Length: 426
Image 1 (spheres, rainbow, N blue to C red):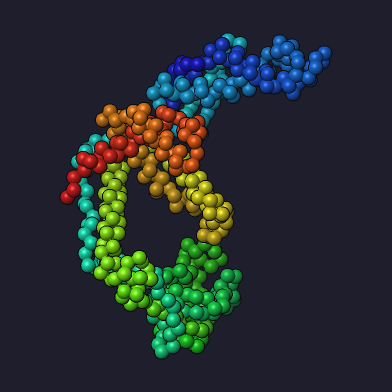
Image 2: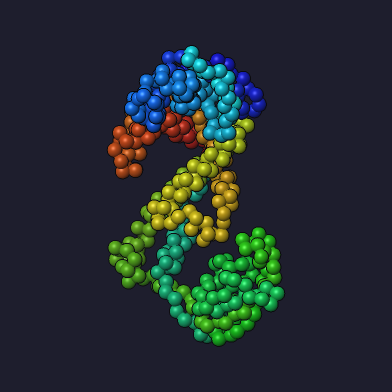
């Protein structure tokens, strides 16, 4: 199998003429014969026992050509692409057989390929470090979060609803005087200020007292998922049953003993300082990497084919679907819960997919320019990590992930470390 010719027909589209030699083709024909003859009835022979020559005479010389070609296309095309120095993107592919016979076959493939890439000025990228200082304000903010997590709700009877309260309400919505589906609930616990309802709803609950019945007017957003309500003005009848407020615990030794293994407030604060310091360090590293990633996408010089973005979206959705299934939820159920369809979800993933594709291309080019490669030891270490991560034998991981692909992944990670180490804080 070999490349006969390679021609660029448009941006990121190549025409490859590929030849498959007679020996390779005839071996595939033999395999197709042995697979198909078991299903064939040939007069004078028991089922599955007719010689190939007899079958070809009866059904035509090319009876096994299609099966043989289908088997050979992937490897033939992959080898031709390597010879042409291009990497094929999984996209629409036009295949045409130009000639076929016992002496082999030739086909033409018009394929989408990864773009020509360049990147400059990736050393010394300037980053703005995020503060990792555990100030008194930062520590107090952390303590307030812990107090909030350990708060309890108490009934409020001496004041009106405030932002942050829980309002227990009955509500029913009307558009043009008619009640609409999904617009009614009883004894609903509304967290005021959570922005979980349409704009303007929660704000109009503020200031009302327990026992009040009143009506509020709001407008559904123009892009509301229920098209029959989008952009419509609506009235909601409200019956306010109860107001609840969070009661936060005092920060004393008793509180500390309830939420930790420490005995005193002073000991607890020292422990928190260490925990917060670790978190801020991690956040700072992540923020620095995000700044570098953003800069690399800006520095990348390439006309990326749309198919690469769409393929990445598909990969990300497949991973998301697996996470949902591990939690006992189907994708269809999730979409119904979110009021979305699969196209809307793909659109939501698109910006992140574009960034991932661009960064990968940038880092692959940096690895190439800097001569960054993964040695056998590093690849083996990565196989072991994946085996531990997925809880499967290393040999099984090696069956699933080709060594060359994993080596490329490791090289990309090393390229990222190279860029990070050269970054300049300002």
